[in-house]
Length: 430
Image (cartoon, rainbow, N blue to C red):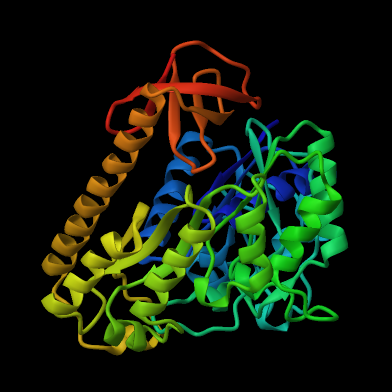
């Protein structure tokens, strides 16, 4: 009597799916499929709907429960799907009582819980949630690293984004609880921990004394010396604090890879997005961090075809890849989200949006291949890399670059490996 969890979207969702797995097991819920949705784009919501229909066809006897950001923002739409038995909000999915309540309900395959669309809903006002509960997990099943949630929600209102309405206001997990959880997963054998949140660099503003993300990072490194590798997920670089920069410069245990929430490389588009940085800010930040940590690599989110974007504006987003020295690029074709200011702005034709996304990806591919070639050249000259093995033959360097190994190694170990080449997608090792 199995429970499957289908996870879409960000690392925070991955963390919450793992926490849900424990809550569901403790509640005694059986024969269910839980779909943890994402709302960052219309495509993400479409994929969730598609997965729901497919899951219902493949396991017609299972109760199908939908949760996550898309379910929080558009609960009625998911409740109206005949395949869906229940819709849980983002607060409810992390509450053990929700799962115990569902486990106690009678369930008939093909008839859900016998509830109407409105009765399927267990979705509260996410804006009323004041705290982020720290759900302790022992580790991540089948994963070499663990994601640890330290923050949730967002107080900013970028004109294209619906995530604050799915996650609520920014709120942080106290430092002591974060340290305790990381110590717990390290004791279980996890070598790498990733700090994750919706707006990670807003960490601590709601806590006593207003500690910053850098304060937390230094506390983890100091109080959990057994942790071999600490990684930070996506950050808003304009909020990076001095203690964070100091940790980047001084600690080899903090991995040399930062993923930046850039979104665009043109100042007018950034202003219309209601971002809080300029093009020059981004370039200056990358140069300063690279000065502090020469082996640092950067990833970034960039949106193609934001409303009103001209060819000249787009060219500046293309150029930001080289100007910031970006290596790992996440490209999003602009996707209008109902109710956001950007959805009411003059749109760029869809065909143009698609072409611009393709051009961004192509430029990003050139940058990534250049990075691979440089790493392979260093390897041939005798340099080695410490690689966290995700499986017997696939690992990641500290810069999050994939490495394919001919000689099998133990998943979860950190191995000293000499790179002997690359294949355009990954580094190659003996």
